[in-house]
Length: 157
Image (cartoon, rainbow, N blue to C red; front, top):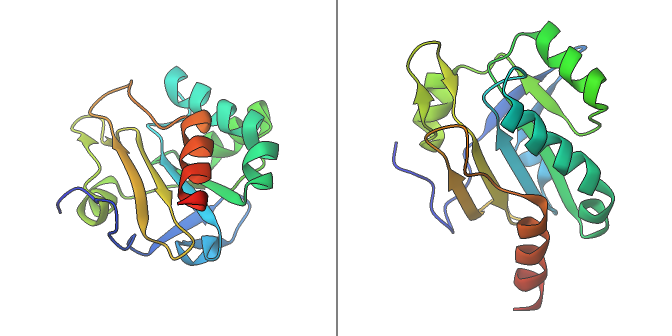
């Protein structure tokens, strides 16, 4: 799969959530701007820092009509421990099939152990990609201030 470009429809992904239940993206974000973050796993300090930054910015993001979701290959226990430890309140999916997600989105995959590299998408209210940020390693990621600035721009132009 090629990388998702601005204007591309974001593919349907079903996130398995800790504690039971699923979330279908982009449908669950419909009518709102949405941030979809793929993180390497709860063991990655850069990923944890990114998720914590989105959690800290959540009041401003929500005020701007932006919803946030995250996904990794972590097992349920590791995902739940990270959610609890860092008090994450946005949906966090676990158990992702790295190769399947990469096939749909173009995300880079680490060969061994197999996990998704950091990837971030800003979706418009129709589920189309407004911005895609692909990383081939630990650094280079979507950040809340950039998301807020881009949404302000898109909302006025």
